[in-house]
Image 1 (tube, rainbow, N blue to C red):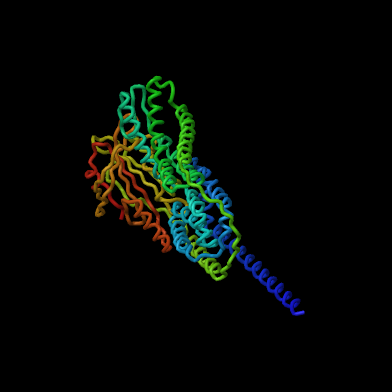
Image 2: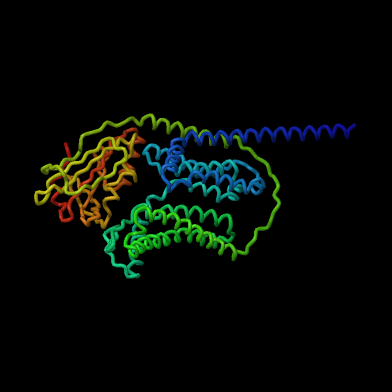
Length: 499
């Protein structure tokens, strides 16, 4: 009789433990789903804008596959994941809180880079919070791999253009090809070539970095070999692109521009890119064959879930507060009225300019261009202005260009003080060259309200502060272009601010 009662008590105890485990697991899953849904709601603007970038810019088309690929890499490690007890980790808050603040700052200042970086920093940090420290360490690469979703790298285009031009010119000179270089223009007897943005190789560079990192994780074991292969994946496409540009110009030189001109070199570029990836993977296989270390096969058991309701509730409260703060900032993001020009030029106006700078502005609220009579009574001073309200457009953006890169190429730049009444701005003078060899000088500065900046970073920081304070002001970019022999000191006294 006592044995029967003891057996009943044991069964009841096991049943209660199972009920508690089921209830705990259920609340853990519900909390996890709520947290991830809050991430989607909080970062919705960043997610929608990054999808537009992935779709609209071929450089970042790979972004569609990064998060699904990361989740698949985590699935491959499921036996390791289940070998650890899944328990929320408060240590992840050291990433979650700063990322949330970065997203709010990015949304307030319309800095898409901040928003995208925060979006794809928050997601792995939230997964880290939900699964715990030990599990997060075991899937560290898949979590970090999600950062490749951030569409960043276009800022490298000018530097990669210079590297491609320098390297190809050096190789052409070594092979005895006569040439003349002006900025990014390379002229040979048969014709002129421009190392344009499409020739920078940034697509090769980013794709090679992503593929190289993934290959190193999946196929290499030694940390030294992984690091070496990732470094190779960064250097190899740069060197390969130099050879590509050199080859295109050399073929044009040999064939008197019959081949490698027009669309031909774009087709060659795609074939060359495929060849680069194959070579990169071949290098990886060579490293893989010499990497003799082996992982011991282990049998992992399930450790279950240890739910911490207070931690999950605390994180939900933090994310809700951040969401409310973001909502209040967006509610105060009212459109700013356009204003009259804050600058005027005391020079005789004229009609058709002797050169056309053709600056590119991304959806400005208002823009205008005026031309003035400069030295020798010729129409050779151009004045451009564009205004941005910071709501429907952005003052500081890589999409705003002070000149059309298809018409002008940067040759050199140096700093020079330009006085605008009592305001002295140490501006960078950009020397630009046209396809026919004409050289002009260009300066520009940014204004937010009544404050003027020669730095995009300082202007953006001021804009963000104004937006967080609910005091958004109109932003203006002012561009002045003059001939190469014109002295800006003569012009600075002619530029005056409007009272």
